[in-house]
Length: 396
Ligand SMILES: Cc1ncc(COP(=O)(O)O)c(C=O)c1O
Image (cartoon, rainbow, N blue to C red; front, top):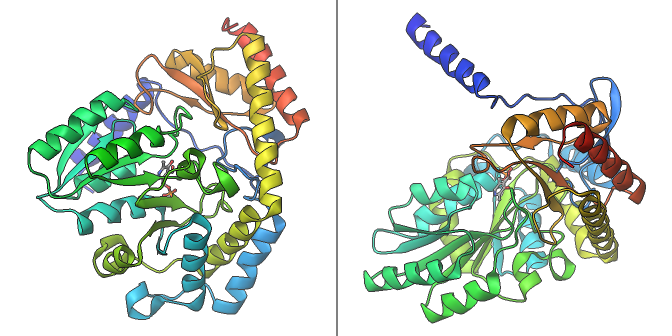
């Protein structure tokens, strides 16, 4: 390796470190769950996207093992060559049926689903109107597409309307509004009823990334659009959060859209088929999520979020408002957020501090995430630890 390249990489790492922005990997020595083992001790886990608690569920794990036994480790192929197994078709039908769509297409990750959606369906003549807080994978997906790009401030419906008007005025053929269903750093749920009204007014399509909604928001956990009781044209999502926590993404849409994506979406055409273990686990998670047990898990999740919000507000913390199980505890200063998270770990609670560039400068926070697997005792212990750390560090 040329020394000059090595020096440049080293300097960049040092610069990230000096700004206090290095993201360490804490190694977990147990299954995912409300209590995990980190650095040799058991701690409460309040930062996984394990919304329904299925990430460490025995039945979900067993279903993955059974699928591996039946289908092997994988296909050693992309889907269209010789990589489509019956279990892939089963998972596509299951997720489309659960979320109320005609069909679905699988990807190795939701990152790829967002990367593969726009480019095949929209060209130079079209327009994409995107929320400013959209996930990085939507931003990248939009960049890969030749359509004209417009951006509106997060959930600002006046600005969205202005951009739709501008796109129509510029003669766009098709317009698509792209938004996260729930914004992962803030826990805000997209204003889909208002977006639906504007989409109808300007004859636009709606795409929703429901990674932080599928499985637990809305009726039967169908997602943000079900929460708001509206229809959307495309949903992208992940099996890596509420639906078993493994990995893998999907797009749900009409039969024709899925057919076209299977001909043209590059992350689908040029990447290996989803591993059978992931398909098996995800199928079991969908089965649980859409049944009565799912209803009970969603009820528990809502109750946990309400309990945490209530107790933390009473303790004097500044929380972002909302009803989502992502509950950001606002601290402002980046260093304070890091120190706070470190102290919380000492107190037996695993949480992570988020700061710029992941969130705006001066808006550093601890993003807590509730799970249906948390008990009220876990919630109360976490609030107690927050209160101790908050007093020590002068936050409350
Ligand atoms: C809103 C959103 N979209 C997409 C993704 C990517 O999901 P995956 O891990 O399946 O690639 C994430 C994960 O962090 C996310 O939060």
